[in-house]
Length: 120
Image (cartoon, rainbow, N blue to C red; front, side):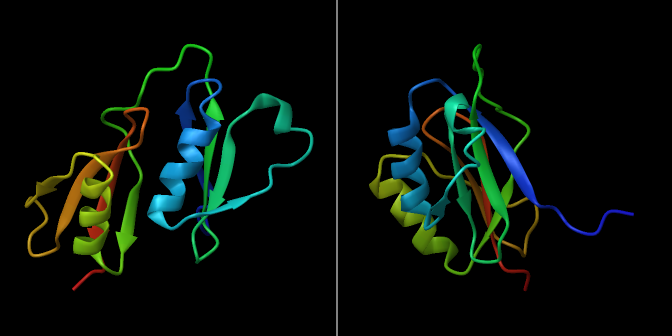
């Protein structure tokens, strides 16, 4: 039986670590060191306050994930939307799960990301 999810991995183009670090800082994520054996592959790893990790790994023939996506819960959904918009990221609100509020955005490479409020 599965007991929890340890991490997700999202793909990124080679050499764009500075860009993903800036974006993940905007989201409030904290970068964690990659194991020494994996550093040469590029990419970067981040952690949420609850310990869940987001790994960005370099993919040679990178194509963004436009449908598959992680969903992040935000304590301040409106604040997150505002922060993303101020940094010139598109925010698309979705009402399909009403009354729970959520929106979609994308990382700097076009990978789809979902942001939702804490369950009412």
